[in-house]
Length: 74
Image (cartoon, rainbow, N blue to C red):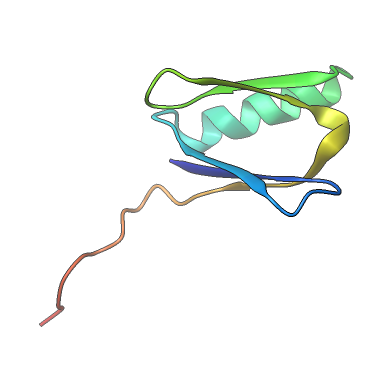
């Protein structure tokens, strides 16, 4: 699952892949926003942990679970 987090007032975004499902990521984000937490904590496939302040969210894009095709389609 590809995750992209846009940061307010920053031209760069955080982009990483995780093995969690889209539903799991959406639940973590919704629970964090509903609880008035100041930070969200997500991890990627390599074991890195991303801690992002909720106040700096510009957008969060959760990628599709369908993988892209590579090569030619007959």
